[in-house]
Image (tube, rainbow, N blue to C red; front, side, top):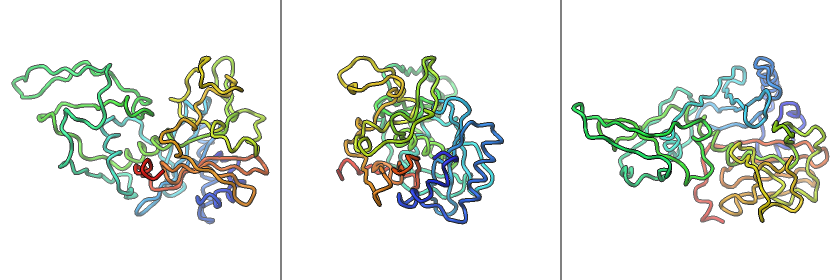
Length: 326
């Protein structure tokens, strides 16, 4: 939700069930404006709020040029001081976050320990090893440690993958190769959780982003939101995730009115499981679309003005039972 339209969407937030305490609204708005000024961002967005057992986290991000690739995320608990989110976590920590089913404690320095008593063996990891990665162990050296070779470096965008079948289990050198890291700092868990939610749930209406001939992406200056004839089609809502920015060729799944300048992102109609999005119009004015996979993630638009936004308000827990509920 762009800070420029923050006050215009307060009522839409309430209708979507993501209301912010009235006393916090002016403080949060001024804090976001200061965050934009201090970091020289072109735009700053309020991403959402993650509820915890004690002190909730407010999440925001900003960008200077590219509104998709160059986003920088921040979090705050006192609404005044913003801390940048870490980006140097590992695949192993991502796997730990997926296994945690409890709420966040509310302390970024809190160290959460995972019980590995029922973990699977190394040969039957939860996520398969990618075919392109070869793991080779040499004979034991005198110290009893093993050398792990030929493991490709993993970049930030490779850590959170859309297709879980492509994920890689990262291994480290231990005295016992079956030992896995069993603790994670809550600040890292928060950053990984936000990235996972953003990858799967952060959506924008078709036409909001425009791709220039030189490849740069900008916000369409004259975009006025979707009308009533467009909001009922899931093809008109696109993922903002950079991993969905793929060039499309003349294939059978291209929409009849395909436009390369605005259709460079993937639509949500192909999301798995089918039916993980639900939408409705309230008060004959506010259009709300909810994610059932990550409860609390919503897109909303004021149909009278065309002003729209995305917001997450939840516990940061994924609904893994959704395929059995649909």
